[in-house]
Image (spheres, rainbow, N blue to C red):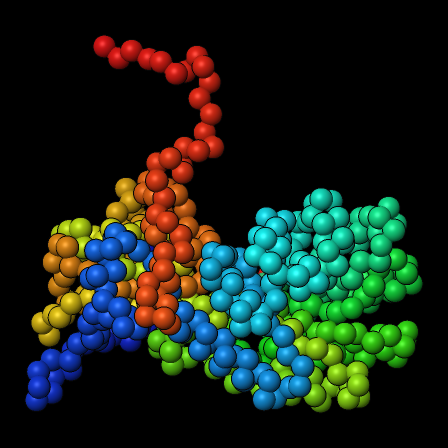
Length: 455
Ligand SMILES: *Cc1c(COP(=O)(O)O)cnc(C)c1O
């Protein structure tokens, strides 16, 4: 007998979707998805190439209206601000702006993008820990609400305000204990230890900056509405304290983003569609907290929401094709697809639903779905119960509208086209597929490296 200690393996409970028999035969996990809205998956791939991202305009607008309804039926003054980093393709941003959204940005480049899209300066919320002097100057001249992240920024902004002879509109970002750990305490000023009050006193008594709001962004893919209730109470407590101490009205409370989309986190027992709270549940938690906090009717602050992923994830699909099938050493079926983690960054966190795009038999098998990259980590799904797919069959990956089209990498392959499925019944190319020219555009070849001879 070997006295080698057995290796520890993390326990994992996972629901297995086996094909249950009934009188009609075997049940499969997925129905084929041959069309999205009214558009044929095959035609989309023929026209725009494989892989291709598509976004449904109808789903985006409906989701936005649903979120807006959930909050506006519970609270008088509500304003959404589109989180640019979640998906900053201009056509997508403009759909949200057409629906009435302001812009929320976290970098100078995103700020410039929002301005260029035509969003008025005072409707662009400037978040993030890294704002250069140039960014701050531009935000000050355009009257944008600047959300201060740390004291160094507060002091620099004060200097620039004096230099420019302007009174910038500011809010502070507040971090706090909402019962969700690890706490996101690297951003903003802490509520519990008094840093938030420290910053408030410095701003108001310094009298160079105009404190118009209080901001928090407590996390992302949050599954707990009650954490938002806690955060709303704590921000309200600060606003009421400011009113009491300085007789100063705080115009808005900005609850940030972070509502979970309907995606399924890796390791979770049930699909995201069954576990993610609805907009109504988040709205109920936040609005009730604000209404009960003790504001008089005229002091009730505007409620700003910077919701990103929950507004766009479900509207996005990735269409692709099967390159090959093989058997792994352990006997499992492996399918190689023509898209990988390079363009589907979120596959590190989610078990994305993958549907075959054509009719299939009722037979299914546990399958590993690989991307085309020459790397072991290029796994799209490590266990998917799917019918055997053949070379050149198509697949539809669901719920990829958030963060994939901003976090995608140009690694080994070029980035694909992005197409909007219009409510007008037409498809609209909103980002062309990359070309070698795009990729080499910023490269510079030194004269002495231009020529070589290989014998
Ligand atoms: C990323 C971000 C958002 C959007 O977050 P989601 O999780 O996509 O809703 C909102 N506000 C700030 C400050 C952010 O950094």
